[in-house]
Image (cartoon, rainbow, N blue to C red; front, side, top):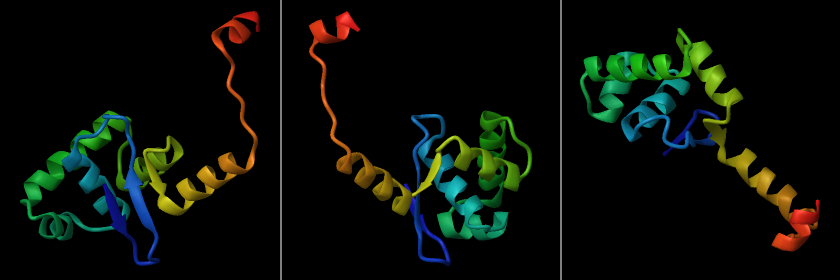
Length: 108
């Protein structure tokens, strides 16, 4: 699930199944600052559906209000920019890694 912000950054939701696909779309709309009516039009759903998704997201995160929800989702890595994912991947690629066999791991 991805979206473009006005700054042309691409974001995605990676919640390991915490949010449904529809909730993930709504989370990205919420992150983009869309009102309920704007999100409903953008996602081709009714405003009541948007409200239901936002309520479910709030309940699942334990947060109230859009800013708290979005901050929580960024803090826990549920929303990430593709740029940050690429930088993380590149950092991992630049460091040598090694794998332990089962016997080597058992000795540790």
